[in-house]
Length: 128
Image (cartoon, rainbow, N blue to C red; front, side):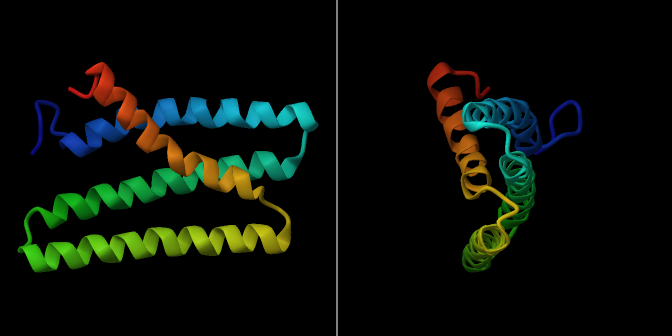
């Protein structure tokens, strides 16, 4: 349901998540600098953050569409979204590991940030 700005609630929530997730990603990458600069870490965190954003854009669109469908079709749409997102992550991680060009941790760690951010927002009451 659009608000006064014409944006859905999911869009507004994603706009709150992305800046914080970007800062968390940058902070985690900075921690890797203690072991010396490695381009694989930088690329891994950059690609991991980008993939996280892409996945949540896709999830948001599927959820917006699913509420208009009957229960069975909505369940299939969300299940398909789940498999596409995690299948893509598996392929991305496998490609990163096989080529050695992307940090495995850099790809995975940003995927946890939206859940962490949403939990903190819920406990602090900033989700409204």
